[in-house]
Image 1 (cartoon, rainbow, N blue to C red):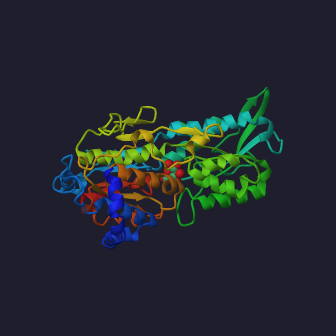
Image 2 (image 1 turned 180 degrees about the vertical axis):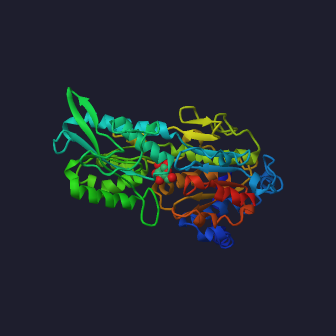
Image 3 (image 1 turned 135 degrees about the vertical axis):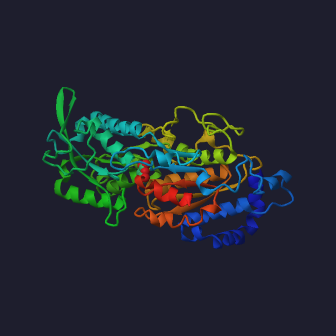
Length: 459
Ligand code: BGC
């Protein structure tokens, strides 16, 4: 009610107000166009109250009296901090960076269960091959050939997905006690050392499964998970051994859709991705094989909710495993919390021709956590948040729009900073004034680089 009222009465002054807000803020000048939109929303939230508003609303907006008792003069190093999408960890060994994950008492990571999702993706592809065995082997050579687009060889989600596919299809080989996740380049003759030929038996007939090619999709400037690079790679692969490619697999939908549009759609070759971005889900109707939802609607909520709880000085489980006063609560089938890792993990769901109709809007808030918090008990707070690469399909087309929906619900005024996906300094340079913010949400370019941020907050 309150918000609607504000929207109507403030409409007339919004334009000048939001311009003023943008003009005074250094970070917003340098950030993506989306930031400007968000600023407009935030200006609406910040707009001076008028006489029709309840008196307690004014109290709630007085900075000296934050609702949960979080003092406004906290040192930056003691402010709530959430890492998301890229878990602080060693990019070669995968070992978690516990110093970063426990930077202060209000530090957490929010991501999703990479292994559960990877297994789902592998099983989805295997099930598809089995169900379509009569038509899948396009050149009838008895070898089911697939190509694999790898996102980032040092990103734990990417590594898990590569392993998940190789495990399900029997093409994985052991390396140091786990499945090797290295790209093979081209392997049309089956001689690559990082993979082996798999075998599947269907209806008494046995087929070889071969990873014909795989490559990290990194562009010349260094950006990983690069969709354009994947589109070029399928062009190269298909022109030299296109007849042998029966299945296309990708560590994410951004790269998967690029390959689908460049080649596999026209050639009717099933293509599988990950993320359940809107365009990928819609493409299932046109032959895209399937994708995995990593429950971005739950992750985006958790990203901001853990900050909200810390700012309110309430138990971190509030509105997560325990219902808050507005009725927001998550059930155990959509997330899990690992206290040792200080990490929240959303659970994944396979999206295929059977159920894609339920996933057509990836930016819709998750209904059980869509209830507006009362501003008188949860005063507006300022959050600095970055996206490692403003052109990452998943983060820009799914995750950020979701965050922008939840920031209103949780009364958080968020400045969204979009990085170039290549250098950490492009982002850290825009964290020049952490003292202006109450909390931070960080998506690193490289999982090893948490210290670049914590050093700034410790100054
Ligand atoms: C997503 C990818 C994305 C990457 C960025 C992954 O979790 O699935 O699509 O590019 O995160 O860090």
